[in-house]
Length: 276
Image (cartoon, rainbow, N blue to C red; front, side):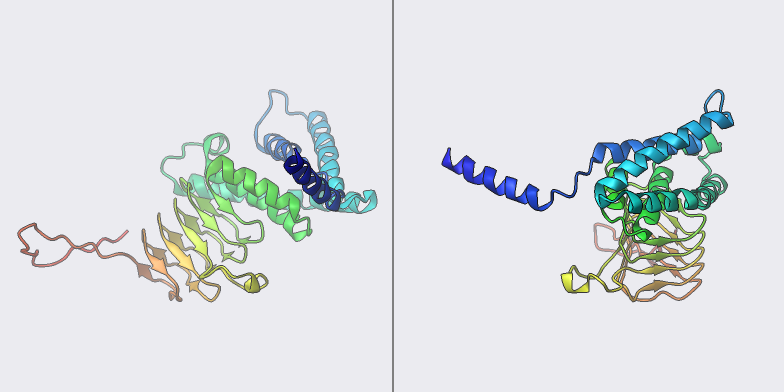
């Protein structure tokens, strides 16, 4: 029993040192889900009064979440107001993202299908709102809701990343986008893409560690692009399963070479190139 008492003391002391934080993760998830439904899922009678009522509930929910972090109602009100003031701009960005999917993906038949069934779009939605919270320096809230999207979709986008307009994630499972990644406009990513750091070091916490992806780049499945000084130039296509740690000029095509060898060791006259 003495062992348990020692553990209980440690837990109690740790909780007391963090007593100013009483953050409810389930409420954060509910806010994310409710906001998505209000923005995108139509009701039978989607009248103005109903929308106003929904936004009033969302305001109250977010106020409580932020207040659990700041423990200051005046700061909480300013922060909550700031988020809802930016929401029209975030909504416009998300509509652009959905349009990009509809225009590019041959499997997408309608906007409704994208809103209801595309995990990549949901992950993008969570990124857009979490990035705003990150910019407001509410660090706990954006990390919690980003991890919710990660667990739900298998897509891990750090809220500190900077992502431009008309962003498109196809399939998406296994995508990782690091904190200091900068992504331009009209970029398309497929499953398993990693935009990561060359190494993990605490001393580089405030350094640029993740790559830059310029406008109109397509990165196919399994590609790994690492390093804060690595830039993929505009209009480039990055093939599947490539490993990149240096700059790629604009309008480049990067791919793996696939070679076939016959079992009797006789090679084909010319190897086959695998180009996406």
